[in-house]
Length: 452
Image (cartoon, rainbow, N blue to C red; front, side, top):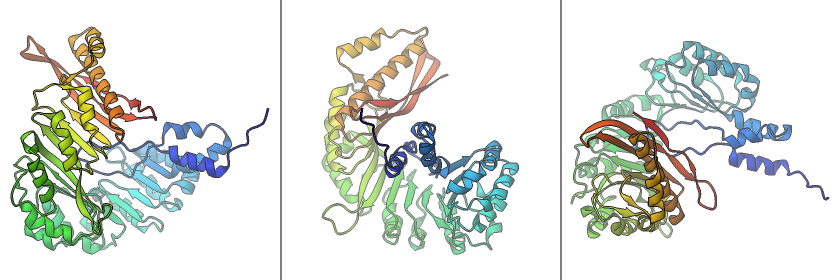
């Protein structure tokens, strides 16, 4: 028998790099903090114990990204310092109070020996001045990602290594622009509880990539006066999120970058069937275009009626759409899963779907319907949850086979058991990611349940 030659190290390294980390699943709509953390995949852990050759290849990936959630993790860092000093380039430090002053003291003492460290995530930095000072003094650290502004005691320090992931209010944003930017701090993303008025036009935030604006009780027309000039003076800003769009979205004085999509949406008559509640736009350059234009990449819709009939029109109005949230809370209709999946197949770039309140609104072929009716459990609440699990998994499986670009479906459903149809006696929840795992478009993942 001819003996197989071993794979070269270069190919093994490429394979290991491909399977090294579990994919970062998309967050639900509002993301409070974009972490640097990466989780080693089960495949990487399995490869690392095959033999010494693969272990040597896997070690840099296993120790490249370290998360220290508590004092015990800090002690483990000390025990594995020989490996961490060679391979760790990203350190994610846990939150208070799980990681106490004892753990922070250990980390500060070990920092000088971590000669490859480049990126550090430090939440709650306002209460961690000493640790922040140690990180800023570290010769190889280039980025300290924080979720709040440092203490004013840091005003005499160079904060050019510090990047603030987000601010959460117009007042905080104004304070940062007037003080912290002068000390060198950068801002990656801004979340405003409301547009900050004309003063926004005069703010300059170098390197800003994303801005999110709550439109709660604010008409969208205000974006023309304060946000449009801000966008035009920030070429690096390539993402805009608008959420809490509870007021009428379709106004005659919308900003220029929203006017085309609003006109098309009105022309198609979609505002009679859907209500836009949240959206995310990205500034991208399409084929044949000389300049970047704003395109809707993520959209949340409360459905009123006619979902399968109108979805193709939504697809034509938002041709670049990647993420779609559909809420059937206000729609009393029933939808065949094959018809609904075919309608969603009109989206050419759709990768993630968030269906909400779909339980009990879907019809199936007789064999599946009989299967769900045959499910029996000890309690009515358990039976409802089991049928819902089967119903939603069947829908997601059909959906990913019809929509070939789709990678993930996020399920977030709940049900209430009523006593004599009047008083709630229990509540169940189903939540989780279902992801395409192979070329046959089969789904992996699980729906976690919580009975109350």
